[in-house]
Image (cartoon, rainbow, N blue to C red; front, side):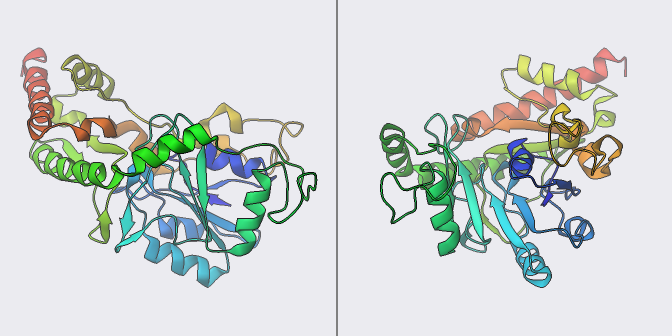
Length: 317
């Protein structure tokens, strides 16, 4: 399966858990989403599916990916773990592919501590997924009838009640995140060396699970990104550097006795230039910050500008 390397490990580890081989393809430098051209270049005669991640809550290019999947006869799976309420051309993500997945883990825009959901229009996928989360029971089968070997992955009623309550305010909160994020991006873009990620005009709604921008040390008189992050945190703006390339994870450096895919692909030699650059330049702000007031967005901009001015003084410029 084709997967992006700029994502949480579950995107790729789930492929391994069904005895598949994750094939990492590079990302788009402007959005950090999987690059359709890179994904197509990675397809072989053994490829069965493409897993598209809507990273940070920004919809990937679903026009290109849906056309690619149809043209090459592949399954299209959407990892929408960070993209609750996001829309591409007015349609909610998760419904473009054969199946979509959402996460309700504690950091997400819609959360109940943990768990998730699968959405699909395919009756066969629905019945298989429904069975697998319910100890292998067929949808219309008996209590002690089991079609598959599986476990209990059902979401509890208490968690579902929390989600239903939060769902009532998801649209309002998503709109607020969009307003603040668009304003913040406009203001930060005026600071040399700060480049917010691009928002495609076909993205009619961004979930903004994360607000990401690119940091250029040269515009801050050589201040390393880690130093910039420490300074920004010290100014009261919680931030982080985000992912490292997934193919560098120790989980994918295994021997043939651990996973069936071992030996078929040497991830240690893999170098995808765009994701390497993204992992060296990205700065993440959490979605909860975008629920604040407009003046709080101004405070973030002021903090970044303050650090830039201080970087010149500290380096004797």
